[in-house]
Image 1 (cartoon, rainbow, N blue to C red):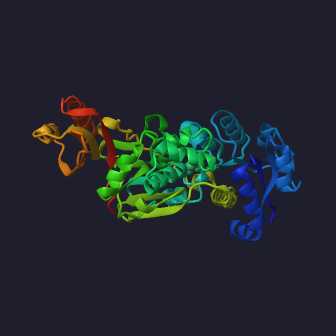
Image 2: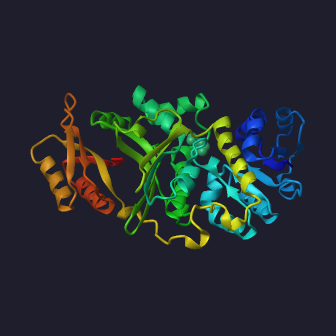
Image 3: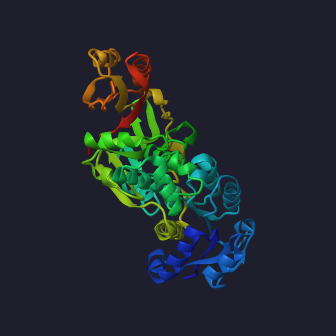
Length: 437
Ligand code: HSE
């Protein structure tokens, strides 16, 4: 059968992996797709690298815009990254009637509504399995495998860099900065790690998952985002003593009045499988009303794991591109006319449990004052741990775990606790999720 022609924009790590896997597994992929999938043109600024990787077998250019208008190309793979040029290229490819496969979570989290609307209008597909959790087929699972369910919540370790850092901090008792420096030296963390360590990358992915889980528009600007750069190693140690691990979670949770969309360090009971996901691995836990909890685990980055997702999308697009657009799987899982206007809730309306660490004077009545403040705000205590004061110190760390409370009440309690004469400095607050199956 006539091959389908693909134009690849960017032959870096993931592009190179896509070329390699597509070449290596060509025969099996063709048997699955029903026709050969051929990369016929590559655009990259580094023409020399592109030539070496492709052995001179394809058309090469440093002008990506020439590929999105090439009439011989059926599918564009966008692996350039970023928001601006990538947006132009994707919109032009759509306008020219080409299907798009992209790994660009930042682009879709910020411009996804515009891009999917344009694709819908043109009757082309924009596939993005590689944008969330690399090689884990979580988009396929949420959009198709779980389509019988009313999805209640998703909690994911969806950034490998931060999971690696947290694992090292726990294993070696090191500070955030010490581990980050080491990770950068070893090439595990980017030279500018801001997107990863400040939770932005995870928020892009959580935003996309929330949209397809609940059938709501993509609303990255409403996500609450906290990274791990301010996390103190002492809290990882205390959490462990209380039977918890701290993970950077992307959480999307359906409440009666809206959706919680948040990324922050989170205490999880250590007995949960997801609490034991270590190093750079990713995992996503999804709770649906029919199926209960399901867990997806694997590599969230890297050349071939991400290529695995890119090529799965190529196969899907190849199989479906002759289908009537109305009968394809909708981009965001729900039919475009059936999206819900369930709002993203402000952080003050979030309901979760809390870990609070305070530095308190070790004298009678201090804990009574603190617990009175919590009780008055309807915050119930689940557990408490007081450390022995260090030699010669009159102050000590007190850790309180609460039952589920409202964020706005906890904000108010923290303000009042910090105002007590017997409390020094700021209260450390880390949210907790039970993630019960
Ligand atoms: N930088 C991401 C991570 C991978 O550390 O998981 C690409 O999204």
